[in-house]
Length: 323
Image (cartoon, one colour):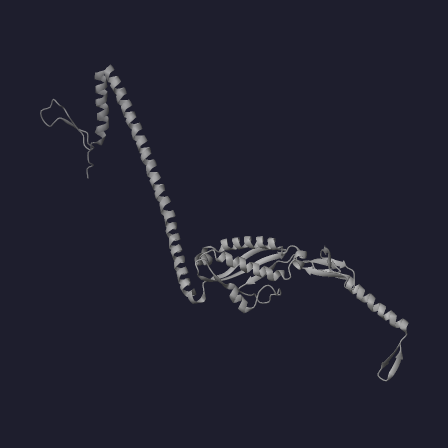
């Protein structure tokens, strides 16, 4: 073989040319034979365009020169799609749309014909790599359409107050259930992990008024909670005091009954003894009564009943000390 370089002609033996072509072919064969599947992915292998197998992560071999083609699918990575907003620096082209499309995504109408601005996130994983690659032409775009359709249907069944305040968790649960059923029905090859509402606001022209109403509702709830706290503090204490007084009254009643029964039993015993010996019993009662009464008197004077004058008398009051 003769070839020219500048004005100089060179002769290349055909044997050497064949060796070079063979070396290049062998190198290309080696390069296209070995491939690597990343740790978070699975490889779907096609032979002449027909599905052959799905391989796990690691260094693998295939038939070279394009006979076997490998599609790497990140099945162990959690993916997400954002609606109505965009996180800067995202590498997934289907994670968000352009600014104009985002404005259309978050603009929704509630069941009571009010407008609301809704932003949400769908988190999902690729569960079936083969279905994800070949069941739909663009499964990620189909998932975006399904997610938006489901969210608009769920928001359209509720009032604006439910959407913005108390119904967020119910909306997330219902939207997740609906989207899971649709994904399984269409066979997208993905599994939905979570739907999370982000910013849910009224339209911009009425947002200030809505914030005032929301603040008033929060203050009302605060006052109600304070009143309930005071109620829970005062009422149990009053109940405790009432219970204490009831128990004290019951104890006093038991004590008075026991004392009355004791007095009645004592009177009955005295009456029994009196019937046996009236004079002795009468004298004993008299002495016991004097024994009980006399210590209460401050001054005591005993006078002889036979005396006609003041003297003689017995002064029982202690004398005052002389100064």
